[in-house]
Length: 523
Ligand code: PLP
Image 1 (spheres, rainbow, N blue to C red):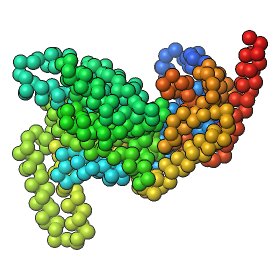
Image 2 (cartoon, helix red, strand yellow):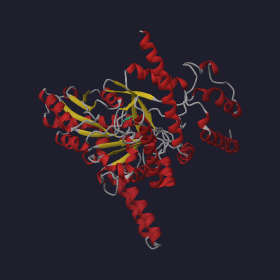
Image 3 (tube, helix red, strand yellow):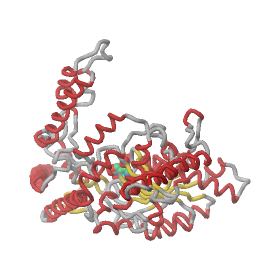
Image 4 (cartoon, rainbow, N blue to C red):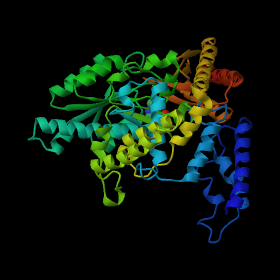
């Protein structure tokens, strides 16, 4: 494919995607295929000779689409949202076009610098304390990870290194292996499974902290497990607080937990994968109070802020905690700008002189140049490869930049508020039907509900909903109860879709209860 054909096919593909998204409500939200459906539809191995674009293109509808779960359908209410918007799609296209691998400033300066500035923008939008921002002289800063799971793992590994160093400085007789064997991480019994996985990968013990009646962890619950563990010679080192838990969107009590973590030298990481986007609205920002006690914080714009997957925003108070833990510098990845502090200064001085000359020109030009120089100063030394597990990284900040500019803060706030309003609409419909109960407080865009009755009854209801394939939901367990989760997901979902979904659920419940009662009487 040459550039001329790319122009033509690119336009066709944009049309195809626009049609797909515009008419997605006409497609069945959940596919009919069975596991293994795809292999028989395509050859056993790659073609020896090139195929035409037409041949590939026609297989999209024939082979791929029949096996797609349509996450952007307004009838998709499962998991949490996967963000999508046209500006983000366009930026991703540009990202692919530039195709740089931005592991260091020199590897593609715009890639590092835009990411730093975007994470500061985003941090300011949710009123993160200054400590987390790269700012002028800040020790903190933000980075885009691929997922919340990676952010948790990175923070746990950094915390592990920090704790080992601290304990070794206090008790030099202890080996690293001795300390590792005693380190304990903690998270709520409602935390996402990725936290337990991070501990497994990090080779440390993890313990659940019991949540209270509102599915939140409070200070006294954490303190109790810490006291017990310290008394038996263990070393608590990491606590992952969750804001917006996966089962029911509950919130751990940061204002109680944070001071305990700080006092006990425990790294507090906050996982706000879904809920974090809501903190751009002043009326939800209070849910983040206590973030000032945290060492690291993460949320996924790729869930709820209209930035397509993958874009998981993570901030740390001290970026040296990450770079100190993961820094390795083979010769082939070194660059003369970064080789020593002197080299940095020399380079910066050269740029400073250039600016001095430019100062004679207009004020506007001066301002632009000052900004440019400032970024160079701070990030000549910065290499995002030290903040993450892989070396390579895409230019993901482009899609954040496009979305933040083309929606503006108000546009994004509108999106969040619309979803929250719709979840309350659904909650209201559930509450009007005496057969059902709401199982957790509805704070953002998730409603947990069930039929009053046994878990078996609710499993049967979910089965009939998902087998009908008009809408799609997933369940959760809240304590011993089997619960249905109704998450407001699609960008285009409207009140009519919520009403349709409720009528459908209600009708299936009526049919189910009828057969359930008949079976009961027959027994
Ligand atoms: N943390 C929470 C609270 C979540 O709800 C989820 C996913 O829904 C995750 C972490 C995992 O997110 P990711 O897929 O970005 O790793």
